[in-house]
Image (spheres, rainbow, N blue to C red):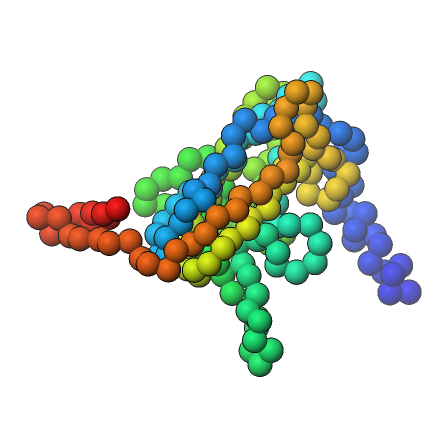
Length: 199
């Protein structure tokens, strides 16, 4: 009875998502491999619809396959006596959005979301030949090695699948690097307002 009660909800969620393979091309995937504690950085992935059909909902998942937090912006501490073992390795200041952000933003909340999926960031439909730019503004808050996995999806529920166009890079990838524990050296300029970060 419990399974029967949940089934219509699942069907209702993905009823408008077409099934099939949608060719996409990953034009670039960039993230600094050498990070510093408390320093801001940007992770950017640019994709193009290389097919002839509209991609239902282009999105990127930042997480390694499998259970747990592996390959996401969060990590887990090894201590067994903590109430919540989840800890951020990178704080997400801003997530990808369809339209460019205004500065300052009208909405003071930096993490407005169009999906309830925690590690997945959708930008909506993508027409043939069009490009989508996914950009995350991040701050490293935990020193040590990092490993972020990402994959491009054509839909949110698995029926629409993103596949690499011919002679194109895979629609999955990873960033590996290290967050150094020494914070960047910063000074205030002569105007009393500008902060200069020295190498």
